[in-house]
Amino acid sequence: MTEFSQLGLSPTTLSAVAATGYTTATPIQEQAIPVALAGRDVLGIAQTGTGKTAAFTLPLIERLATGRARARMPRALVLAPTRELADQVAESFAKYAKGTKLSWALLIGGVSMADQVAALTKGVDVLIATPGRLIDLFERGKMLLTGVEVMVVDEADRMLDMGFIPDIEKIFKLTPPRRQTLFFSATMPPEITRLTTQFLKDPTRIEASRPAMTAETITQYTVRLRTSDPKAKRDALRKLVARDDVKNGIVFCNRKSEVDVVAKSLKKHGFDAAPIHGDLDQSLRMKTLAAFRAGDLKLLVASDVAARGLDIPDVSHVFNYDVAHHADDYVHRIGRTGRAGRKGQTFMIVTPSDDKALDKVLKLIKMTPEELVLDGPAERAPRAEVPAAAEGDAPRPARSRSRRRTGDRAVEAEAATEAAPVPDLSAVAEAVEAPVLTGAPEVAADEPRGDRPRRDRGGRGRGRDRDRAPRAASEATEDAPAPRGRPFGDADIPAFLRRPVVIGA
Image (cartoon, rainbow, N blue to C red; front, side, top):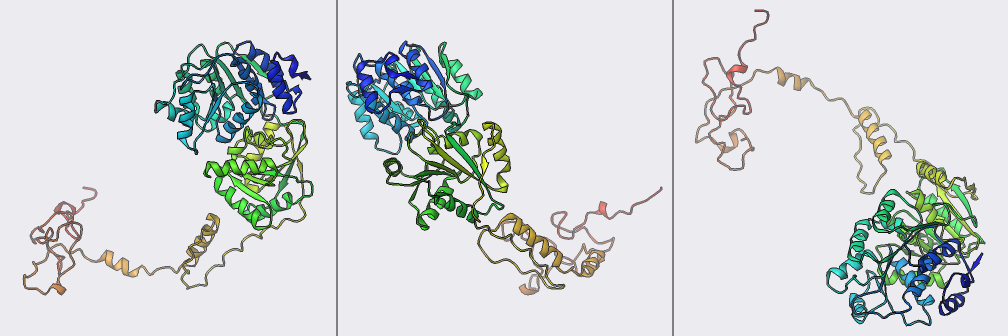
């Protein structure tokens, strides 16, 4: 283990690091800090929870120790994919920059833009931002990026997942080419590799650990259910969070709507839980996170917006209410526990519909978590089959407006089809064999309206079909005059269709 004092940091920075309680550097910090202090570009690859934030914050402070901020021209730029991660970087910068005169500003959505503009106008050394708000303020003419000396991209693979890569490329082109770039990511998909090749200059690749591998300090379990019923899943989750060893925990769901449902269910059953996802107001999200960090909140129910980069040091448990759609997300989810050498436990609820997603996770982590058997979680019995209707009875239409599963509707539709009586087609056959009527005398002008035949309603105007001949009351003969009106009407058959067909001539 390497001490921070051996990495070339100044006494002021070392004092600030010691005040946080850290004395030894993590592998990514040990390798990245000296290279960054030398002014070279860094491509850092390390799993979540390994100290990547300090790996770029500390050399950034050292680099900017001399010089002064200028109005609307930040000297350093840090890009983060989510508001929570950007706020966390700002907190780290505030801790490690104690004793210096460096200033910083946080540019994220969901908060007042006026305060951010005021900070930019005054001048800041470090700008910590999400891509969307940064581009918005730049296009409003509130800043220039031509003075950026150091640019940091944190959680680049998460940027890719959230669709920020075009924004990142645009921001890179707005900064001077002679800048220093520190690029950190947990994984390196092909799109990220292309980005680093395009904008980094001969970077030093630092891979502290294999990508997408789980920490050894985390004990993983799976909980299998025989049904995919949401009530059974919520019942299983309540049994897990009620365990005696759960100090606090984060519950991850795949959908934001599911986050609200699960949080409400936990609160209804007496658990201290609160939701956090992208649709909530930013001030509420920050307040919820602050309460969880302070220990005032036991359970945080979250979407993947909280899965990456959040540094909450002492999380005892992580609960995967849903199996992650992407295997990498599972790694980042469980990385919220077992941080900084602490022990952690994770539980993943698996239903029959999760088999494909589970296979991807197991293939990525190259291990099979221990399967935990709960003490009889409530599982709903399968729905009874819809009984067939009695012979001769018409199927009863469903009047309920509640949503039903597709399988249930299919079963009922099949039963209704089998029970439906067979219609009598004799009347239809007689109508088909009846002679076609093509000619008819015109309706008298004084004929009562109620005795007139029904007009064709194909046209928009009322009088459009007044000259059309009505259906005749007797059979048409060969000598009958051709019917007036448009051809191919209700019973108007052209002459060429009435010609006899000669076979074998």
